[in-house]
Image (spheres, rainbow, N blue to C red):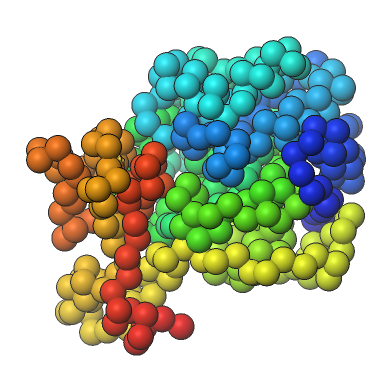
Length: 382
Ligand code: SF4
Ligand code: SF4
């Protein structure tokens, strides 16, 4: 039986967060025996893009600082790292660490921030999708990785938690290449599970004090949930966390993919909840992203028309040129390279769009909306 610990925490006041994180981690059986004194540990923090902690896009620095303290108390050498959206460069890392409050965490705790932008090509014969993949070197160099995720909805994957967070070990713009090669939700979910099985986090923790609903992981609305959740199993943790915010776990592609491989059932009955009981948690369901069920049409229309219908009816990215600052981040992150900026503003070729919504995810100005066709809402939506 997998344990998931859930602790209430109403705000980001450091002492409250520290108590909640320590309580949540202490509930994980034998975690202190598993993590050997003197180990080097990477806290793979969700640092998606240059955002302040108040934006609820990145894992809050108070949560990261408490995890650092917990691991340092065991006698570990701790490193904070991620490969955020955009190129994996020291300059980009510096600006994201600064905005997300990680410089302060490093100063106060003496832990390290990763600035090593080396990349390894690793072979992964057991992977279901990519048998060889690039990974940031630090993720393979350390003794253990911790997944420190944020509780958010996600345009492509419906929900992002402990498993999806680990996509950040794929270096910078290589992410776009992998999105393209695994260009549907189920293939991509399989790849995320492959990464999770390669990295094998020693434990995972979700900052669910303030999460994000709607068009996450960056353009949704902040939503208070007041919880810190942790587990040795990232799959059990995501099952519990998605269920708490009103998302049926088996509709989350990563949970479904893990269950098909018998890594975890995706069923709450198979989780031993410690701390706050599920029936004591009262959270109105999170609003889902507009792109939810983007693949619903597949199989519901004759095959010959499917591609045309899919392209017409599936939710699509819509660029608001009034808000757009012409930074080009969407163009750089677009896997099939279908965004033209020759007019100074982004114009996508939607006939070749794979609906990954990376443009939406990485736009710093929320200038990319996801729009559904009215027929999709009226006829096809469940
Ligand atoms: S849509 Fe967003 S990411 Fe794309 S150029 Fe405009 S501001 Fe930058
Ligand atoms: S336009 Fe946006 S949604 Fe379409 S493929 Fe490019 S990044 Fe993905």
